[in-house]
Length: 193
Length: 119
Image 1 (cartoon, each protein chain N blue to C red):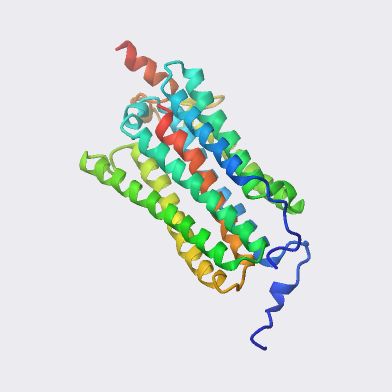
Image 2: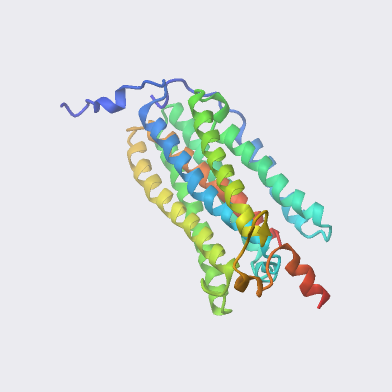
């Protein structure tokens, strides 16, 4: 196979959707079930335990709101990167992807400060039902942010050389999904008390 | 080539601005002491924000029909999970069933908050 040739899976598309993008949608679909299941479990337990409101009152709404703002802004950068890639402007797409990853870093840093404060105050994973869900949901989401950042930086390195620009849209789709998950986590963990 | 058909790119900054305004609405609404206002500000606004991101940033509305079918199918699975499990989690008893009597010694469920307040 020459260096420019693509594996057959990349060129064949029975659905009319490019293979890489179709795979991304399948990943997102499976993530819907993973996060959806966890969120559903949290909602039913939360409705069954009104006393969890006391624990929920300890979360910092302003920190959660600022993190929502950061993720929304990083999503804007991701979709602008997709637009730049569509215009075959790889270097611009790479720059915007790196800004998106920076948003992820800011998000995780704030989350780190939040968790440090919570743990110092004695609220750990085993402190009760609410805290178990809080750390599991926010932790799993944080891992997705971290994974997205790593992949985004790899995609950006190629995009800067105008290579594999179709990946810009794929990583953007994943990032927007991670943003949507947080859009629901914010009211569930920080507002509903 | 980025995709098989390039999508129309709307004014993304405008959509981002709307999302930020909605975020402010949800935070301000959460300060209300009226339960209904808090719930609408929190979850109603979250649904609108998620819709805006899915439609304008993920372009779900212009994807091939397989994509929305796939996503809706997965959401249905989650709804089935919720409907199937929620009664067990949220209720103490139902028609011809009740939870372990030992568990019933511990106040839980929707009535617990009200009981605690009366005490």
